[in-house]
Length: 399
Image (cartoon, rainbow, N blue to C red):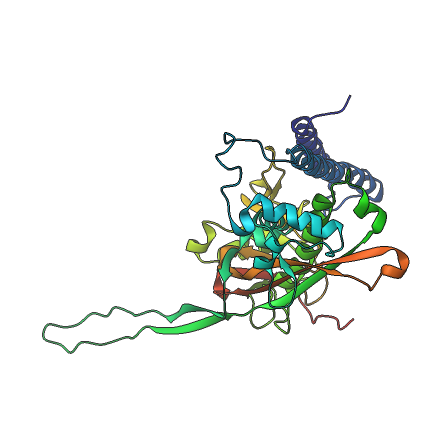
């Protein structure tokens, strides 16, 4: 009998409590485990990790079931003669149907209604609903986009930042006023082009029973999300966004480890390196491998990591939400391995609307059609002090 998501969460929490109890009961005087006990604990921890992955799979499956259950057509909500499509432009059903027809015909059948959605590079602007669903796909796959502040831009966006604040001073009676001026800086969001191509067989295009629209949205969404998230974390600002972990233009280094592993005290220090106002909406972002090591850490109040008990809620570290991302470096000398802060100060600028285009002849010889999705986006951490980084001691390897 298949378990529900809530039952799996209860089993995961129970397995974690058993693993913690075993770890506490079998530590030696030096705080380590024997080889035999370590193997048992590793297997128990692996069960916790596998249960977490199964929960994530079921949540994704439930979301996909809900998406596929959506009706293909729009219900008739108007009386005959009153008109069936009150929306206009890219929001209209006519535009959406014309786009789907164009996709299935390799853009050889292009309705005049699509002409209002032609962009400067020759592609067609995606319908409003497509764009919304692409954003949903990006949010689902992209941790940083979910936590950041997203801005729609039509050109270069200048964001004013207070570089220094005015200070008050005590003045004696009839004494001279002392002026302390505030200074301001600007952060500029530009737009870098990101594109992804998907090849589809001509047979699949001709199969009206297949959800081509849904397949393209999911494929484009996942590919763009992965490329975005890597840039939002580690981008160098050259032809791509500047990442949160950039050495000079990203977050501040809050704590550097004293040894080759992370201690509970160092994570606590990282939390309090972040100024109190930023801690209100703060979260951790790290890699799965780093989090696996952190799971074993505890202080006087117990283990630092606690699994989420409610569907849709993130796990917590010292009471703060913790998210994992494959693009955060693993534990290694000189690497930034954990970020903690208010990631809403990372601003993402979406320039315009995503576009679809077809490569008509490139893969015709092998019976395939390539569809291209493009977007223009930039990202930058506006206030470096809003995010603090835990860095491993030593120099980063050059590889």
